[in-house]
Image (cartoon, rainbow, N blue to C red):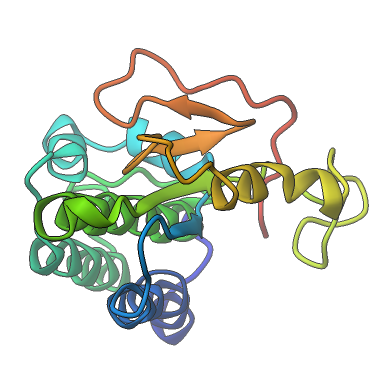
Length: 198
């Protein structure tokens, strides 16, 4: 069963998808040559995506999806979940559904902005990627998580410090310093123990 409904659902999607979109739009303007932008997503986005209908998977994995189309998908998810029709509309009924969908939004939004950078500011050589720090011992992750905060920071720091002559990764989902295929994967990347959020 989906664990967040109504106001809580809208708030989580706004905080974890829509607000980062606003920040990305404003953040990218002043970034100079060879800047690095890293968004924090989650492997949970893969788990939820792989359990969506093939039609939804195709939309979220599209190489040409626009930001407006993504916002439409996210808003539809909120309304469908509030109405209790999200399963009929292609979303799975999982405990991590809302968190996973919001992180799918972060990953796709990162890919959209990376594509825009490639089209509009190619010469600036700015690299933008989404990443998963894995399950980290924080207030959210809890004391039994597999990684310390320092270990969880390794992939975001790796991406933030890519050399100025690096050509990639760019527009990718990265975990454990490795690119994981967001396009139609055959399976979810190996991730070790899984934390199920309340």
